[in-house]
Length: 70
Ligand code: SF4
Image (cartoon, rainbow, N blue to C red; front, side, top):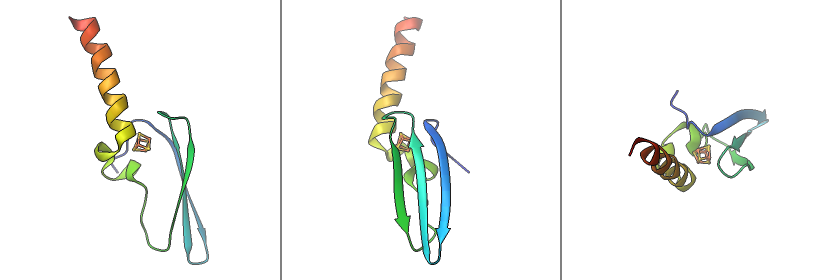
């Protein structure tokens, strides 16, 4: 499974027909929840490159790396 490198933890909790995904993001240090009645995991384990938090953190890291290599 592809997963965002900034994903700290992903927990799936099934209750009756409802799925609750709890995921902790290293970028904003928030614990988030996503509710769904179908199998629909959060962006962190799908197309995480589209996440604005991922993009901003990746840019920040790339800038830091280029400062060290220049
Ligand atoms: S995809 Fe976005 S919200 Fe999810 S862990 Fe990565 S940066 Fe955080």
